[in-house]
Length: 241
Image 1 (cartoon, rainbow, N blue to C red):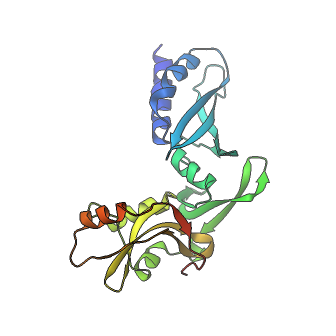
Image 2 (image 1 turned 90 degrees about the vertical axis):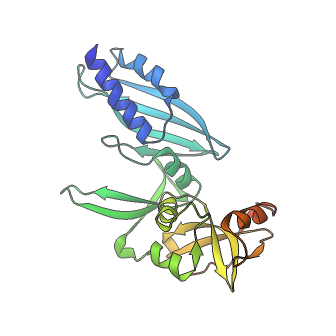
């Protein structure tokens, strides 16, 4: 039916926007053809070589109404949290994965009066609640300025194909991002993440960091040299603030 097809098409768009791949589409279409008022879909995937599982919840308000994607519960390494979806928008699967790995995510929100505002979010993985873990919110008034910190710590993008806005956006998604720190005429490759709670950027350093004179090497050559080093990271005890 055209009615079911339209419902299917907008739900597929919602799933794609939130980072779910097309593996759910066939089962989704089948469930939309039933008379149920609610149903669930199970999702399994791998993010950065780490297995993740999710249960997606769909419901409709009336027997003849459209189904809506209302929330999903993501499980990562034994940690589980509910992420709510409103009008097809919410945390993407990758952002949810990053939150469950202890990193913060930047989101734009809409208040009840229609005004938008920005805030950083992380999860306190030591405090459990009914929906998973206790969320911690850091509005703009909290004073975390990611852009200014990148400048003050002299952080450069990972390759010549990146620009500064791409680096910021990656950190806002909660990614643990490779980058270079300039130090006395050299580039040191590190991993960085946004840390709004401490109003800083947390730096994870390579176990055996290589220092490369950047005046005499291209960005690609720097990448090749550093690729020969060990890639396992450790957190610096003294976080630069």
